Image 1 (cartoon, rainbow, N blue to C red):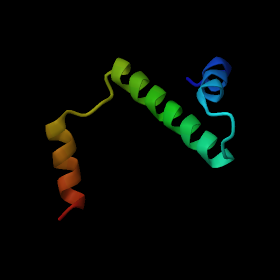
Image 2: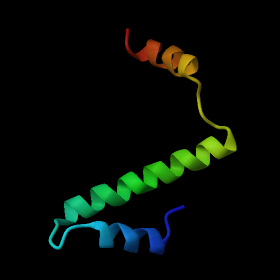
Image 3: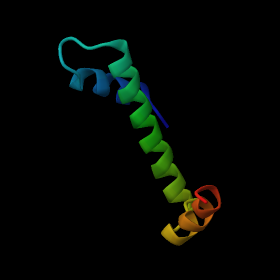
Image 4: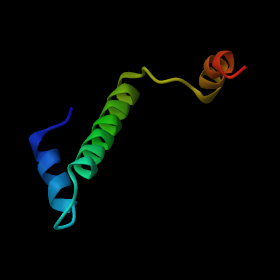
Length: 60
């Protein structure tokens, strides 16, 4: 889960001047990483073969 502390840390790691778009990109990246970690811990991820099988249906 994204926390205020993680947002503050992300802002403090940014350069002195930055765009809102840069900040939003960084926050979205952190959120996606957090979601991936949570999914991994919950065991709701796909193996490489499962992913290839699912993608194969779309990539034909």
